[in-house]
Image 1: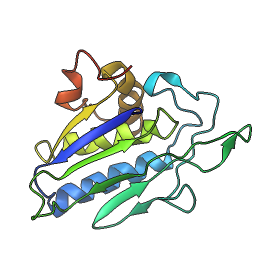
Image 2 (image 1 turned 120 degrees about the vertical axis):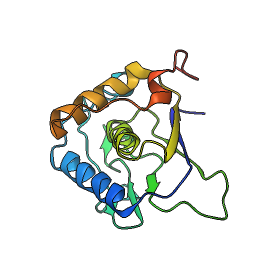
Image 3 (image 1 turned 90 degrees about the horizontal axis):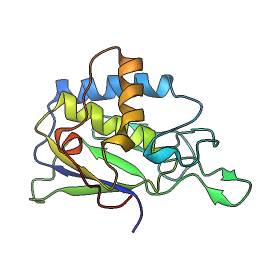
Amino acid sequence: MGYTHYFRQHRSLSQPEWQGVINAFAKLLRNLPEHSMSAGGYYKEVPLVIRGLTGTCEPIINDRYIAFNGDEGTLSGLESMEHESMVLNRIKDAEDEDSRWFCKSARKPYDLVVCALLIVVANIATDAYKMGSDGGPEDWEPSLAWVNEVLGEHWRLPKSIAAQKNPIAA
């Protein structure tokens, strides 16, 4: 399957909640580390670059959603650092009762930012999403440390991630 994060949207975010998510996310992007140690430290020698949906252009941050991916650039010409795009919606689709979403990052460097965005939204809009992951809390710790360092507050892992004892896949 691949290393994946899951999130089910229960409700839309209010405009103040969404603005808080956007502000925090923008600050994180301005303070992007050179490399990522999340998800077990795979690809730790590869520079962390955040791009738009296709691995090129800039991330999308607007009133409706946040969307990004890794860099389409390659490691020794063999492998792209983009995988599946991360898309976080502000508005829950009223016709979609489940509103289940996922991002398969395959442990690539942009996984740090995927987890960071999910940490931010879980702390700002505590009941809007329920999250799961193929990784355990230890895989999310680098993202949590980065969020706390950059945002200067005490952020916590999403409750469902912190309580997870046995990841689905290692």
